[in-house]
Length: 589
Image (tube, rainbow, N blue to C red; front, top):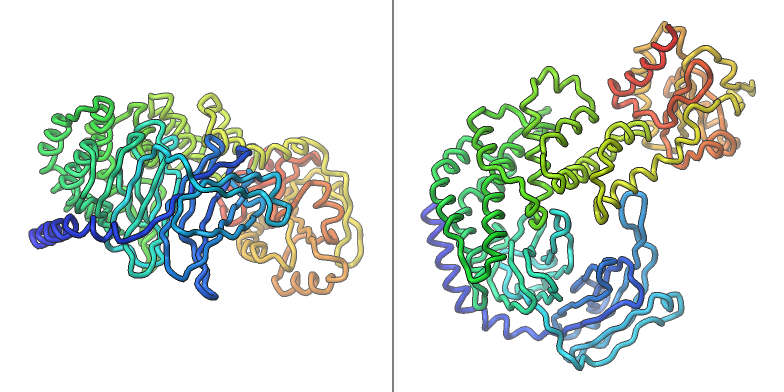
């Protein structure tokens, strides 16, 4: 540890001496601009060196502000172009709508750009370029990134609902470790410089100028030539927390080592937090809270990352905290923070989710094992008392469970009880996007399934009416569908589970074309598929009627011939699927 500290001191001195000189050698061009329509865009500056093209910088424009600001390095022999990616709302997240590209002449003069998306469909139309006359009042964060290799990216992020949202990306160039971010800051607060591995918290006011040397490996400052009193306070905090941060950053941190050091540093940590004082009272209050969250969050992270199970030779992250000693747990509870200000931190979302997961340990393990997702979410939501934080926790559970929620019924049971916490912004987008995926299914649930007939391999026509009085489990698949084949072994296990049960019938419906009938029959034989196998050529009958656009799809019909569920869990989720089927079988009695 002493050698590590000595090296940091040496690097810090050299960095301070060389930072201004190295940064001054680089020439930069500032591109400020705006869109005439408020949408989500990505603005990308692409460099071209012979046959090689590469991204120099990128800015993310959202619907809250149609402006952008980029600082681009001048590189000899490199031509540039401006690429605009117009985004649209997808079911789960933003998706690319279309892209346009414009040549861009950079000669050292700062430029003002105006982009009109209504003209993008016309060849090379929609971009107006003129010299920048009025200098913008902006905050800037520039300097040197130590340890970031050529081709890797550094991003400047803002905080939205306790999560980081990228504003700009700067791509490091060969033999050049300098970076330069400029930002239109209207409201002071925390921002972050991030890489895939680390993040560095900074505090920005509208016209702040910061020039620093960043240790990318740890996300800490190792030298500054220009700073503010708020950011100097953050640097002091980084130095205190660095030994703990280094342990927490490990793939599988050593719990015992961490908590021994963690316990010994609590007096120092609490003394620092108590003495936080600058001329900025708003920063003082926010940073005291942020420091308390950091102190608690690192302990949670270590407990979570060390909660792993070994499968064969691989460690797999568990779904809940494992083997947490009571004294560790009590220490975390003692230091917890639950104020709304957490949403102003880029770590707030992660912190609240981990804290709620730790609260699950208050319930006996035998009880937790019997719980489904709905019961777990109920307990976690009730364990957080602050309504603003409940909204963030709901978003975290929507993110975590979105691929585990099979249908509208599950969405209704898990998330709809907490609709009151769905606020505008990222939480609303997530909730509505997942709801839209399943809402159309409600048109079929409880309605008759006796409205289609399909042929089997011998041409005999079958209707679901032929199985009246039985529960019908349907597998929609095709020979060309890879994921369908993955589920076949699991489906056989389900069929075996109900072997000899005359109250259930398994039906396979293939969407192969009639011309590929032989392929279909051969796969039935090759995979030894059981049950009744039917063909819906190109999905023109069954699949089209029930809006099945993606397979595999598994459906369930009750004993009265009505749709019980049009999106069952995948067979790989064996226990979960069996609960669905058993529920319908129980209704036979």
